[in-house]
Image 1: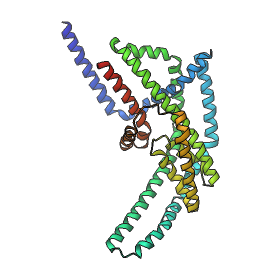
Image 2 (image 1 turned 90 degrees about the vertical axis):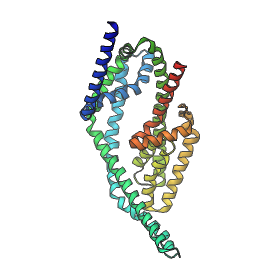
Image 3 (image 1 turned 120 degrees about the horizontal axis):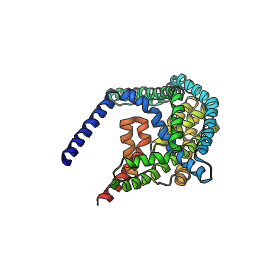
Image 4 (image 1 turned 60 degrees about the vertical axis):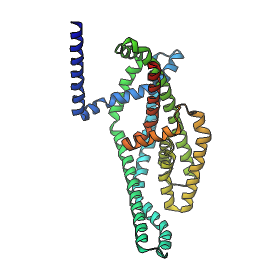
Length: 349
């Protein structure tokens, strides 16, 4: 009889699980919209939890500490929204408007190459192929820059439109942070006792890796973005704020990020003169050397423990399947997989 009950239970569980999966798949769009505030709340609470703990260690009650953090965060967000966001939107619109000039400047710079090729004794079919590839490359570059700028502008508009989700997420995050121990106990109660120690140990290790990575990368991006903004201002490149921010955010992507972040700034500088573009390249190289030699080693210190080949592979896979977002989150996900695999093997062996 107990065996029969167990079989019935497993069948019911599998059936219910299948129904839930099918329901989520059929209504994934609406479900996704509903869960967006909860996902945002989870991220907010995860990032703010260490700060709440530190304030609690200073004898500040948890609800009071959360409210203090919210006040600081809200004040910073208000200043950013009032003074920075309008300038970013205006700069992005101006960049879209001058895009034809960027393309024209690139074409002018290729004129010398075209003349050399035209006057050469190469076969005509080879010349035609070279010219065709140059034109295709120019068109591709123009489309990539235009799409990137349009997407950034659209993203800013969407960020304003999701203000309600952010407010709701912060309310949810408040209760998650306030009752963190309750949610922890509830989660553990859903796990069989024999797996709890493994889960706790694994989660602590994952949390340590991810939290250090996130905090280190955000701080590094902020510092690099500020330095690049100042460098572009000194060089005299237009729109230093938005271009510096793009460089700082792109710097989060390992290996490829600094190169991707420099492209918009160099393209804008090239409109004015090749010399200014050269100085912009030099400025980005100096900042990158400063980052590699001093900033990143001090802040991040290679704590993810991933081999460079693994990191590059993770970034390529993430970028292929999920674009820029995939490139940003691929490295910590790879580190999480490594931790879980390591802990699982240790448990089995």
